[in-house]
Image 1 (cartoon, rainbow, N blue to C red):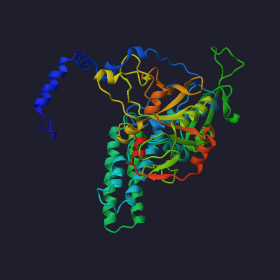
Image 2 (cartoon, rainbow, N blue to C red; image 1 turned 180 degrees about the horizontal axis):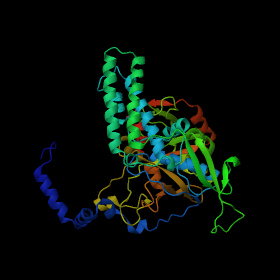
Image 3 (tube, rainbow, N blue to C red; image 1 turned 180 degrees about the vertical axis):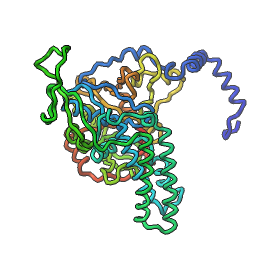
Image 4 (cartoon, rainbow, N blue to C red; image 1 turned 120 degrees about the vertical axis):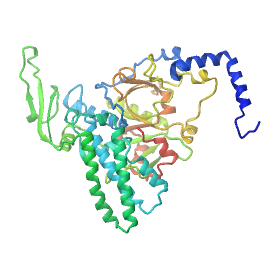
Length: 478
């Protein structure tokens, strides 16, 4: 038999050998009828997991990103809204993700065309140029993308700019945006070849952005420049009292000592709303990752080139640390009453669509090795080096179960796939699973050890290409 080809005789032998094994026949019948994860889920292990936690925060209703890649924006907003709910003394508040999406797309278009101008002298098959053209207008992003948007464009409540068909299912809008931007890129590159100066190209780019704005307005609606904020608040609301209005009681209101109040702030801008009602410093956070790929170094900040979405905003920055460092920082922030934005490779060993135990992420929850009768496990480093894992999805830690030494046993995770996903919208994530398939948290600087905070604040970042092992590990599909 040639070692260069698959021999039909060898395949026939494999077929006969497979069918002779009872375990193979049982596995085949199970998987062909119910698919892999349902057949592999371990009932005895899954039923031992319980969603009770040493530290558990009060949470608001679950959000839903629908069929879009905005999880990084939802996760960031879910952290920020905690500060707003405390300020207003309310149990629920939601920011407009469609508003954030509008300006994310506009800024990404500008950044993409700026990169096209910067790379105008490169050949069409230049790797960085190809990366910009393929990834420039996607939904994905990072914490710092959201922080730059909040700092520049502010925020609005969800009812001021609600979801649309294109924000809930973004593929068709994105396809037209990508076509428009690639057409513009072609024009700019031809103009450079014809001798246009950088200033001339940038002036033309500004004209091109008008079409981007128009397309976004058609798909998402025009973003408000001013709006009236009118929302009920609690008795412990801590805002300008001149903006509070007492709601006249009805016959159903029995507690006259605690009159209902409304916050009414008229004709404000999104920036004013963020400044007054989101007591949250967008730049007081550090993005910690644990990416032990062969080409990365610990205790080192990294900057991924050519992916920053807001020109003039803060560049992306990731501090690569030991897993225990980011876990303890997350625990400290949870103990202080603040949720933690995090990221992981959520679909790894996750029986999302089975009827029972669909909210559990655990290394022993599904027995894939037993189902297939082979060893499928890999080390985290090998998975990162071979592209088997990356941080694909951002969510929010809302609680943690600790052992007697203060180490995490399991995490309570708020997702953004709606209340019907997982268990009422939440996931149980074992600490072991997060060690293998997680590896990112965003925490306030005050919760970092002094030496880690110094690295975050002062160490120069190493530049890495978007196709490097480190950059692929931190992902951008979140």
